[in-house]
Image (cartoon, rainbow, N blue to C red; front, side, top):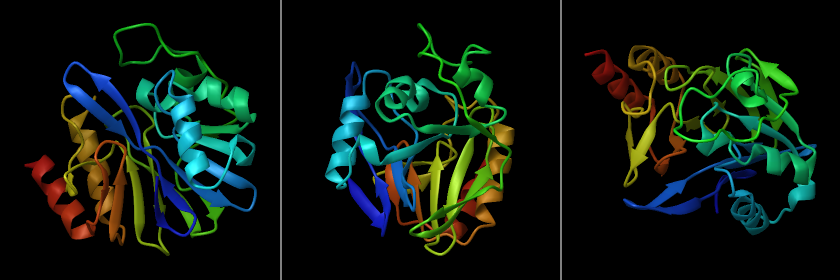
Length: 225
């Protein structure tokens, strides 16, 4: 667990694969109502997420909401279990919600889908959540997956990019070509993020990078070329 700024926490979940250890980085943000989780992690990883929440000084009872950034199983797979533990309000973009709640089958994945979970509030982008770190804005960033969203805290110049960007060894990189459904659209989303004043980025894959909007703009230009 790492506190990126007051009330904003980056979590780490790890799994062993044939290629070695893989790490994932859901997050949580403090609000007046309690913790707002950003993504729930893989199926079977709810206990690992709970341990990270405890490391931040909270418990399941402090979680009032979960915002799913997109439909992929490594983000929404444990949502049903988290919902059972917390009775949290579930947020997702309107283009993502059908995959989460079971109306449509997730586009990605090669096995049994994760348990469907109702989405209580469907987002359209540009909504703002009040947090202890200031307003947090929903930024619509499709391309990697339908209805993908990122979160931006302007007072902290902090971007929670989910899979719109990745990082490796602290260096900010573009979205994964292998796992993005539409790289042209993903590039447009990166350009949208480059318009924000940013001094740090949390990526679901790769963790935190002390990168700025100039770096994001350069990534966007490389995708366009």
